[in-house]
Every structure is written in structure tokens, then in C-alpha cells.
Image (cartoon, rainbow, N blue to C red; front, side, top):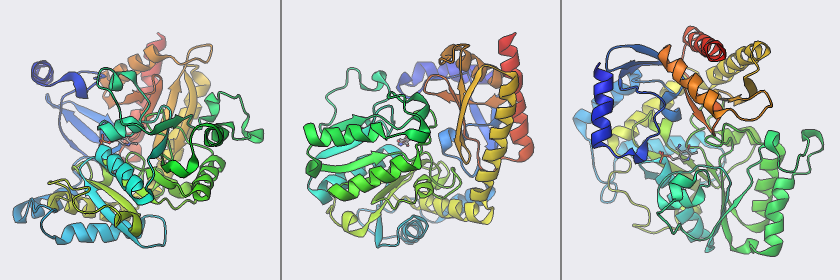
Length: 429
Ligand code: PMP
């Protein structure tokens, strides 16, 4: 078996630091929402490269754009010269991000470096040091992004110290509200924690930015209440704190809007994107108010390979495909269909707990009879799904992460759901 041989060689040659494998799957090729392993077996893809493939694997228009550019110019070094596709992409990003004010773009190569950049720009622009982020949030694995994250001890063990000045508050996860508030009468106790800090130990005039994912991804797909997000933005405005929206996972159409923050009617000061921006090619962008972008002087945020021409062309083609194929509308519609199928399955299957979603970002909890998280069942169900031809992963111990490419067909989505349904049955038996 070729796949197993790749796995064995990988384990000898590649550090385990980048992987927590769910099953021995060695990807070899793919098209749209289908992937093939090294032995030619075909799988439905419900993971979309951890939300990097909103346009699917190897979309022909994006591959054509990459090939065409690769034959002309690969690398031009943004630090020393100008190049048109990076300008065209910046103009496009400025036009599709919320906020009718002057904006500029800064480029990088990954979601992590985008978050590091957001921290630097926010500190420089405001002249303040402190950063507010959220418990259980994931923003990346470079030191800045990691300091902003608070999700997993293994990421931090033995590599400290982290950057200083980071304060992690509870993410508004209503169904796990530590204050047991009910949605109808919720007093936003979680927001009061920040206000309390402002009166006790965290001078608000020393806070540069709040960094938040408007829909929590690695937290387990958590959609915060609009009231919370708006009140948080208001608190930022009141104290001159920048609002940074981490759209690395949920941006580029996945939630049924270009950017998840649009669901809350907020115009962030800084937006961070990567992953699906260039359909999986290494590119990140910070889109921010011009005065923030202008505050950091050369070479304050400069990666040699940032804004690589091939990646910028891939991103331009990605945006065109999302627009031309109406993928944003598709994500809303398909997300709704998948959720109603999951809710129907729930009637037959007590393993299925809460379903949380916005567009085509869906989290399905796997629970024990007492309602508690069932990590073991979740892992086994994912494994069984793989055996039956579905690439599915999970988050936050017990949450199935359903984030297929937005180009997935109704038939492929149904086939994937059927595999989940059968795998749940197999687990029970
Ligand atoms: N922010 C969010 C919300 C993410 O989900 C991720 C990746 N899972 C990152 C930042 C980091 O992105 P990257 O892995 O490309 O560095």
C-alpha cells in the first residue's frame, strides 16, 4: 500500500510537531470536493484543507492562473520592487472588506504571521502595549499569534516565555456559559469580565487591540451572540482600542458573507485573512485603516516571499471564482441543508448534541448519554468516516468540523452526510 508507505517514511523524516493525525491518509490528488489517496482511493472532502479550500481542490480557473503566472514571474521581492498583481489584489481586498474608509493592505504568508502583524501594527499605531484575546481561541503558532492563543497546553509547554501583555477573557460560548445565563435574559456577564479587568488591573488606555474570531473556529465552531460582538466593538470605540477580526478560518465566503464580522454589522480596524485567500497557496493579508497601515515604517512587516506573484494571481482568481460561481450564496444555502439533515439525524441518534453553524462552517457536538463531551466516540466516528470514504476531522475534543469546499455539489454533500449517518450507526453497534 502506497499510502501506508508514505506514512511510515513521514514518521521517520518529518517532525511530529505539525500533525495530529486522525487516520493514515496520504493525499495525492483531488478535484473540487473530492480527494484521492496515494493508492487512488476516492474520498469526499468535508475538511477543505482546514478551511483553506473554499474553492475546492485544484479549481481549473485557479490552476490556470497559477500556471500562467508561474511561466512569467514567480518571485519579485516585495521589499525592493513593485508588481501589479499584488496591487490589484490589495485594491480588490479593500473593496470587498467592510468599512467605507481609506484602507491599505500588508502581506505575509500565513495566518500566524498575519496575527503577528496585527499585534505589531496595533501596538505601533496606538502606542499601547496590551492585547485582549480569548480563552480557547487559536490564532496561530508563531510567538505573537501563540501568545494570543489559549487553546492547548502542548503548544506552550517548554517553549516559554510567551510575549507579555496578553489577556485572555472567556469567549462568549452561550451553551457552555460559566454564569449559566439564558439567552433571553443574558446580561453579558462575559463582557463584564473585561470591564471588571478595566477597573481592577488592566488600564483600558493601555490596551492596543482586541483580537477576536467573529465565529470561533478551533474553539469548536461557536457563533457568539450579536449583542456581545456589538457591545465589544462599542467598548473598543469607547477606549480607543483597535478591533481586529481574525478571518483566517471563517473569511472568504465561508459563513455566507465575504467576512464573518459582516454578520454583526461591524467595521473592524484590522482584518486578517489567509487560508482560502489564495485557495491554499501561501499568502496572508491584513486589510486595515490606512492610518494604521502607515504607522509601521519600512521594514516593520516585511517577508521576502510575501505577496509572491503566483499567490496573488491565485487570490485574484479565487475572488473571481467566488463571485462568478456565487459561492457566498451557496454557502448559506448548503449550510442550511446540511444542518437540517443533521437535526433530522439527531432524532434517531442521541450521540448528536448541539449543532452550531453559520453558512458552511458547521460544528456538530458528539455527546455521552449525560450530555457531556464524548471525545472517544468523536475520534472513532471520524476514523470510521475515513474508512468509508469521507475526510472529516474534529475540534475541541468532541466537535465534528464540517467545513466542505463551498463548491461541493448537493450529491457529494449528501454522500458525505450518509457516511456520517452510517458511521454513527456503526459506532453504536
Ligand atoms: N487564525 C485562525 C482563526 C486559524 O484558524 C488559524 C489556523 N488554524 C490561524 C490563525 C493560523 O493560520 P496558519 O496556520 O496559516 O498560520
